[in-house]
Image (tube, rainbow, N blue to C red):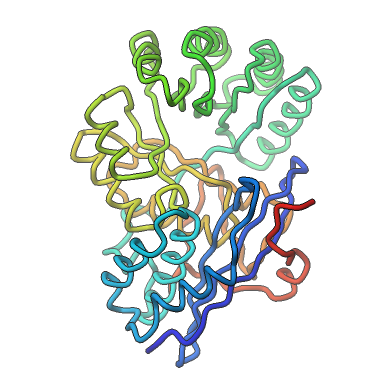
Length: 364
């Protein structure tokens, strides 16, 4: 079987918060009719957007004359050719392994030796409270999600401790101990003294399972200062094997936050988890807020990872108002369910795609 062509389809979807996210659907078409599906998830605007014509050409040149089942040299070639784009490499590998699963008649988890579990606990994101109005809107959001069986949440800290207190106080009044705080997420942008103060104040409402990205990423000493002063586990995003080695060496990080998009593909994500495991550290499955195809890949990674000791973040299937598949990723009582194969178990819905199809552009 050979890949005969690649299709890249840009789409734009709104989150329930009103924010617009852009994604690119990836299709590897073959001479035997099977199609591998991938996703470049939540493609960020860094001033200019990707050139999809160029990416399509790069994908097709890597796949030319290759047997998809001989995936090791293909992945190696992609890593060399697609060095700069984590989402670009991730979309390529997701489509490749979805296709391999379909060829073999098994799930992507099966391609990698089988799943260790069939579901993964996940949290719902509460975005930054900059004001009382933000806090009150987020309290209502928690009320609704709690009614749907989602009891685990992640709170992004925007710098306004008082607004976060309003939020947590309101949640505690409405839900008491039924609400659980997976993490206080500081996004690696705050000074360490502010972070220590915020953790001390906010943990009096709910003790988080962990704290995330606890200091300015350029301030290694600040990261260590936070580690010395708090008792909660600390997680950090890992985007390269070199970074994984550094975290293992410096020991201020307890948990590697790994997303397929951030890692640049499934194989890199697996290698990073193995580095963590060799150092006695844990993994959680992060997110860039994916649609169902991306979440299916994330859930697969989580369910095949042995040192997955903490809940993950991939709730894009709940966050977005519209999706692009006939059978969206399923959640149940705060867990994302591992989809059935073959491949990732996803099938595109052309009518849904038509509703959200939009050129990939940085212009508004």
